[in-house]
Image 1 (tube, rainbow, N blue to C red):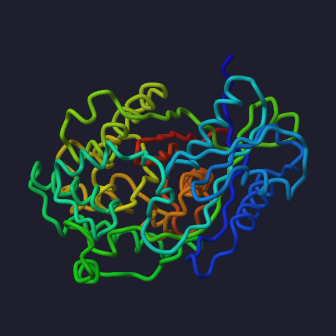
Image 2: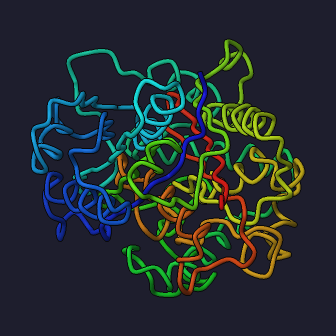
Length: 395
């Protein structure tokens, strides 16, 4: 049994710096309150809940949704690194599509600690042990620096060597992100920046300066998905559906490739996008708006090609020609992306979902992209989990 899956509603709260943020249960409740209001539903209509987060103890999802009622529905807590929110949506979509339920809630939230990401458990093997070893074989890892940006620095160096791209082209992605964020009240960083601002900032690793790295922020976002039958019975008229979606992990040849680009998920992105396009019968050139995982400027550049938005090796020309912004071929991260909103891990994928849904409903305000019928969402977690979702406008 396979049903069409509608997006009944979306919601999020403004993201905030860790020093100014509310607790995860307050932020999560704010996102759930917003999505229920957007959908026009009461919580007792929800049949399953999937809660995405990384930095939290078990059953944080229950802590969030019990504020709306203890209705005995299954609540599943999802930790899939930076793709936790999208993984929660993937599970909710599967539940509705399969006919297991008719209405499910995906909520993602994160109360982030300040500073760079770090391991929280020192008494057990790290999930990324093999990735760290592979990175050290390719890149001169500095033990005094945070590890995560060094993965992407290595990937950026590899891309430049392979395709001859200039380092300052990466920096242009940050300038574009802030330009887009100016119209997004949910973004933390909305002030414009110049190329000189980006290039003149402290160097973090390789070609990456501070303004090319997404900051840790706190936040929450949510989506409700349902079947056509549920929508009809409850008087709902959703305008957006999930046309295709996939969640991918790594292939067996990952470490044999000796590629930093592969270590940061480019192969996963490419395979996931190919599967989604084939399932939906869509050409990526038909897509006018994309929310993609720009944890670092390098990853946005790599993802252009992984999603088929431009040809391999064509990212620099794509950027310099302005094909990644308004007036170009496809508007990437109209929200300002992670570079401007920050990256509360569990919330990110569902915040992307909210932005694409608003775009398809024509409700994105100053960020609105003209003539949108399809919208793509891409969310990546190292280790690896890659989610690609294609949303479509429905009548």
